[in-house]
Length: 393
Image (cartoon, rainbow, N blue to C red; front, top):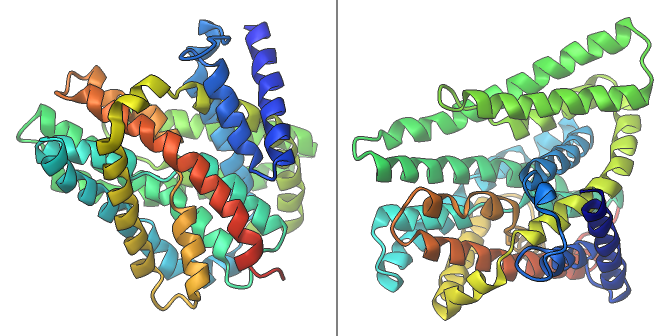
């Protein structure tokens, strides 16, 4: 296992440096490094590491969302509130339903299996989007209109909608009496519960920090530990009640910064240093999940379906940003920032196949192809357009 970790760090850093030299996003180099050293290419990563890959990626995602939470403030959230709410569900639902309907025609799937495919692909990747938006926040790009905060906030909730609706289609496939309306009503409830849980834990931590002297480095460890507990709690009780724990993780960081801005800034800085290490594992291990042979099997039809889905998502973003105060160039930037797929598709793309769903292999192939196409393109265009479109304060 130790050798595999060293290989991940070495190739991840090498890919990052090479792509930065080429004026391309470093995360793209790490993703490609993961594909090369992963089990579907050179197979340099030990099975013991791959077996805990999902947990390692999850911890890395928690770290970046904590850092994002510490970067939020009430003023910025008020500025983008209504638009963020619309962007959290309108683009994803339009993409998911468009793919579901098109797959009936192009793949001869029924609506239920098409819905599974649609809402696997519909989730935007916080692993790709959030680090980029945090960088723009630190560089004060687009912050006069709160564009990075808008994308960061909405993208995190977008996943909740996509995963919940996908779960509903899976339940409906297994049980014809499955209550999809009840599942959909769980979406706002899970978001509210996640926010409440994060705010409560953050408030308790603030009381603890006021009561006892704790070094900032120990605070970082304690907060991360409780954030991991939150995410684990979601998985433990998901059969009874749904909690959007990743939203709660951001809320935890937000309330600490809101009540103690100085502490929030210091902790954000420390998580930024931790992120330099954890991002290697996140992006390299996401790349290692990509089976290029499966992606190629999806072929032209899969590419057509993904393109139609992105077109529908783009229309959804434009509809969501009406009356937002953004100009046409800024809206185009937001559209492209909503393209990347990676984390969710790697996590749930194989579920239909593992559950014996007919054409589950085809669903997986298109999910993998969506990562191969959109993660690199999205990252490249976001980095190219940001200096030209986002105003610096």
